[in-house]
Image (tube, chains in turn cyan, red):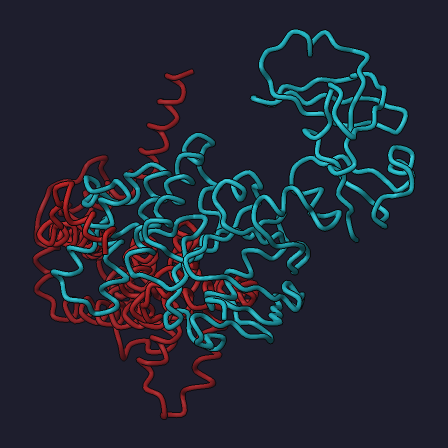
Length: 334
Length: 281
């Protein structure tokens, strides 16, 4: 049996059904991401698990215990909020000690645990500071320490890095990952950033319209999007219709109406078992380490991604031949 | 342009301060009627005032009425505002027009309504008056507490405290109250000034039976202008002292709690052992 199981969860907010018959299961010690666009219900799902929003029907089980009707404080679930929600009137040490004090743990143990966790997140010298005196990244570490120190069975993180700038965000997400692996905490991480989800997750649950659109490892979700929504949300897939695919490969492809093709799977050089398509590069965009070329072909416009190695040849290319392998084409379901 | 601005500001400050200054001089004047400056100066009006037991009684009554009502406001109204803002936000739009009602309903109407409803002897008139004043405090308290709650994202703080195992009451006292202290203080000061100087409701509901400082002032004004100026100045100074005391007390609380934090300071451990102990655990 899974460590956390959600069965047929329905959650209504302001008369609108936000989560619809949602099912999900997570194994102990995993870091999973709930990935989806704004308004898809990922934060609401976290609030449903934490008990901050009451659910209409369904069941939430953690470690074999039904917590569906329990108050938030009795669920043994921790939460890191998007806005950190640190207590401005308490020092960093007092913020971290708050949850332990609520458990009526003796002062010596509290001090020891607080010291350990602050050292772990690299804030041992900020114990006496107030949240207002810290940077965004430091505040986020305090929020994380405060939630971890009480040793929750599941830690929920509601877009915890979204308010930080890109550099700190990347650094913190790696630290978060490292911490999760070291302490073996089961974490549910909410994000709308697919790169972030790919970088840190053991499994990704892509959400759409209050339901799980697809679940799997980052590789599974990226290389085999199961439907049009996931293909559109993960990466920048080229979407092709049945007619275009039949022109390229004949009628032997798996039955479907829409197909996806990763931009990096298309090559400029001949490949085994690949069909060739002639086209013209009409646009180039440098996306850091990748150059995205927009190629006009007789089957429509295709995006082609190439590693950006400053190669002049790519800049000079205009008329190109693209090589596409049938095995790279993914059939999408509605 | 700068000179012009300074000139306008000086004129404005002079315009605002002049009445107070004139009242102050008048309260020390032996006689001031037919000359530019008073004919002489004296402390006798103040001496007369402070020796009058009715004045001391009036001040005491005003203080009792204000403190009792303010305590009720703090105990009942502040948690109610927080409760609605955090747990019943959908009723907030009903709360907003309700708190503005005291501005819309004239004091005469409120006093008449209260008297018609409660003068059957079952409810003491002091309680009726205190209840009336309680309603008058709604706009001040609501606006200041509500904006403080918004500023600190009170809902999220309460949720965070509850997730960490705190009860709603503990989270309210330990986390929310200290963070909306400034809002409560501003609301209390405004309410205190309004209650202390309240005349209409007090006069209509209790009148001569419960002579507060404002009713006393009005009575004295008809007898002696110098004496009434002394009352006004005393009233003003008293308000300033009480306001300063409230601000000072709030700051002292803040300092004391930060000192307590210093005492309970946690000692950072040397890198090497304890954190590794946690990791290896």
